[in-house]
Length: 143
Ligand code: DQA
Image (cartoon, rainbow, N blue to C red; front, side):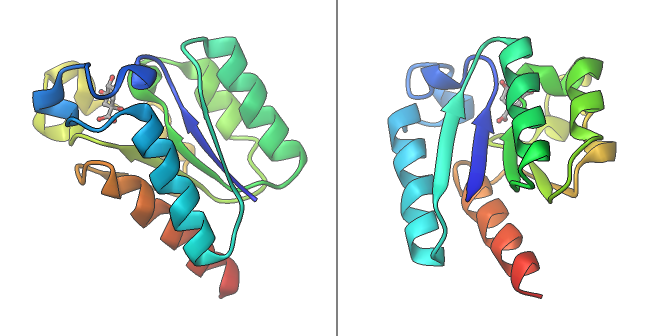
């Protein structure tokens, strides 16, 4: 099993700043991730929350059960030390993903407080960032 966890405002994909995040909805994203999981032969569980405590709880759950995670921390990326400290306890790979390329956007998005405790980061490929992250996790597990 792989968790695909999404932070604040990502449920609004499709209507939220489509010039930045594209026209596809959160339901489209969830289906793309589950379909990718089916192709890779792994169950994918997709969740979204606007709440930091809920996200920290999901990261603890993943750590307790050695579940790999694809995480789009959304705005939490840039300031949540609580999320960083939770990710530091991980027991399986965790790939940070972004739909846009934060390094090419506003200055405050250039800092990720979680990147240093993630396995790696994939950013700027639209929804394909998630597909690449799922492929990377499955490939790493088979090595
Ligand atoms: C994002 C980039 C973040 O800076 C932003 O706060 C988001 C989405 C992305 O996927 O491109 O909510 O994580």
